[in-house]
Amino acid sequence: MAAVLTPPAPPSTAARPRAVSRPPWGGWRSRWPLLPLVATVLLPALPHGASGGGGGPADVASGVAVLVCVGRLLYLRRRPLSATAALVLGLPVVGFAVATVTAADPAAALPGLVRYLQVFVLVPIAVCLLLRDAHGFRIVAGSLVVLAVVQGVTGVHQYVTGTGASYMGEDIRAVGTFGPSDIMGMATVVAYGLLAAAAWALRTPRNAPAWLRPCAAVLAVALIVPLTLSFSRGVWIATAAAVLVVLALTGRRQALTSLAVLGAAGVVLVGGFGIGSEMIADRAASVTRVTSTPDRSVSDRYAMWSAAGAMWRERPAAGVGLKGFPDHRDGHASIGLSSGSDTAGAGQEFRRQALLSPHNMYLLVLSEQGLIGLTALLGSWAAILAGAVRRLCLARSRGHAAVDCGLAAVALMAWQSVNFLYADIGGPTTVLSGVVLGLAAWWALSGPDRVSAA
Image 1: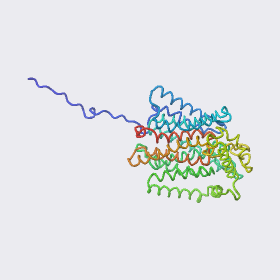
Image 2: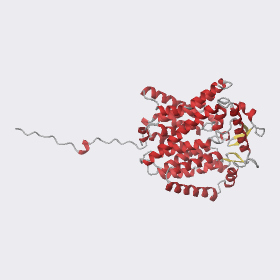
Image 3: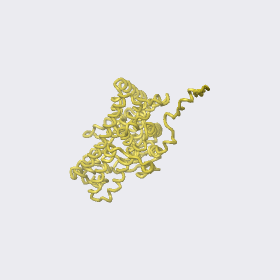
Image 4: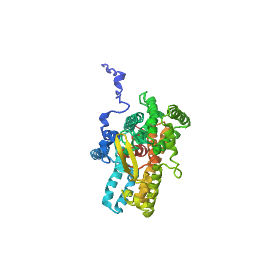
């Protein structure tokens, strides 16, 4: 009987499937749908004269992102959102629709409806659906850091060379490329980048290059300088609150270490080098000076807050309608409200800028949309923030690889929530609020399979 010869076994290397190496940060070939989101983040850096008011390049890019999202949904035929995500992200539509229909002039309220839908519904949904995993989140967050660095360097140069916006008789206020007409633009984007960099410094992704953590830490500390030189009190408060929230969620030891580093950096930058120390102290103290020698901007802000409250008391359920605050302002404001604020510097001649909003997003919504709109909007944001914090705590306890995304999402959402106490939508950075809400919503509401990919 002939012996049956068994063919030799293949080498061990051939027996195992060959591992396919994937770049730790993902390839752009499969991530091209993120390009409109990246463009939405970066385009506000164009000089303010190029973009003008609403409908600038960043808004066009956000529209392209929404269209790409719709096209992918129709082509792939996937379920767009979970029931929970659809409810949370779609809830503000109720208030927008009611305020538009019940407005004295619904046609005049339509532009406001489109703007609110863009920023608070469509862009966040597009971000949620276009982010496939944690790599995509980091790409968009990295774009925020790049934008912050560009604007921060520009702002510091303005302070050093005396080419910034006018502040206390000197052209030293850092405003970046946004100009004095959008005085909080640079401070907003610098705060976004600072928080994103701080998240990477606190929890670096596992597959990230070794240089990422020290660079992120240096950037986070360095961005304190242009943030300080912006002299934007509301942004200071919001950034400090967001940093404290994130540090509280990272653990006691790391929180204490980070606070010590931040304190030392503040002492060196403000105390040691004297970077605007006197002006910074006076600016911070002006928040509480309302009755005795108040800052004019503080007095005007509280007068507009009072006017917003009067509008709500007049129409408590649905408000005066979207875009209705400017028309009803004079009929409800006190006699002490000035006609506008003075702006100059950074390449712009002196001009008087009208005060068309209360500089408080919650009071703006309350006055224009009433309790219905405010309840719907706050309910959506509260659900996103609570969900983001809950998922971050779970990710930490389970040793999740994407904790950095959770830290960034919670920090950005906390910052936005606090900053809206001192600001509202308006200017080229408005669309970035939608991107930030989308990042936080993706972390809070996306499925575990999408978030766990790191």
